Length: 261
Ligand SMILES: [Zn+2]
Image (cartoon, rainbow, N blue to C red; front, side, top):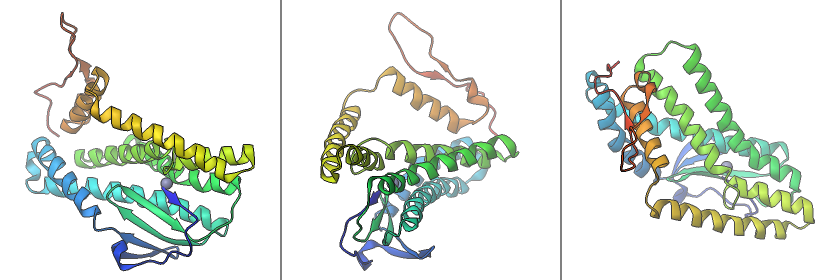
């Protein structure tokens, strides 16, 4: 995400742990990040351990690798915003990496729809690029199964960050894109902001409904496929839906004897 318009925001201690400066931009790790990192380690550690028993406690280190790859993906996203903004001489105050991802805060800036659009696009574009790099690594480099799993995580983490952020409503980057388009069409930034704000409310309601409503067959199948992928990245590529029966059932079959690599 990116945020602009604040009056000369200053880095403060409550932003979290200072990680230093990258290209002159101060980067902070919010304390809340440790919550999501702990949840990822506690959830994925046992899964990794089941599939790679020889790792022992190292399975939790691999799970921590998941969390760190997600963190790096978010950092690259925010840096892309910050560096694109710098090209237009926007004052960049800081990047904060948080429980929910991160945000880049800019100083007060007078802009136009074009630069605003490009700054918004830069973050998701960087993640699509990283996902592409991960995909090339997966295809071109012979990897240890754990490395293969981490490369898959790199791809999925970046696709997740990119796709989530281009949802077309504020405060996401997609909302900035909508804002810029309406701004360009009407000549009024305020109208753009209002339109993107309404779109953001619709998206929030749709996401809430997706969480509350019971999962469909399709979403369960995706969960199964992800689970199979964790069990054995290559052998479970033969994922199949559960056979049709009198009572519609959804699920997947992953060979119980799939070799652990
Ligand atoms: Zn963003």
